[in-house]
Length: 278
Image (cartoon, rainbow, N blue to C red; front, side, top):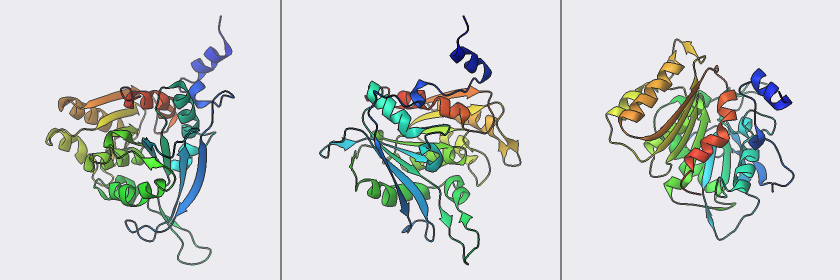
């Protein structure tokens, strides 16, 4: 018998599942929006960010944290990832320990004149393969989160998640600062030559293995343009991680350059990252 759910799955192999849906019996965490305008790392920028606190919060307890780049899309309850809903469900099941969520948008520079158009600094922040974004997280964003709850000091308790340029950003921050971040999820990661990120696949092979756990997702229909081939770049990243015996996983589908596949597997990606630390 073909059920409606099966029919929908056949029509859309990247349809969201039960972990992305709100359930009456699942306690909901609290999400609050803020604006950050006081950056010294990226002076002149401003950005929205959201903080997720689990339904049960102990003021005396240190919590793991997961940080999402392009946070406005991830926090959207009707979006492709639905981060807070996923966290609620996985925490309720015991698949994840109670944790904090930080959803950060890339910066913008306000218009110079009234009525003008602002300028996004997303590519500058995300695609530059150095440690600047990690510095921004450590010195500016984590202290803001710490005003609301205690953050575990263990780097194994801190995960970074990003899609496209946000994906290479997540990896780059952990690569440069494994003393602060040791878990990464990167979807359709831009490990291409936008701002030199193609360097990572070679650097992994020639650098002493770092204590980071990496989940990669991409699809055969991803971009192929003047910056490079996204599918090839992600396969090369996986090959380099395998060569150096990293704790990694690659999920490769047939999707294009969008967040559908990565969104669908976000619950399993998070389970894999925390598979031995519940």
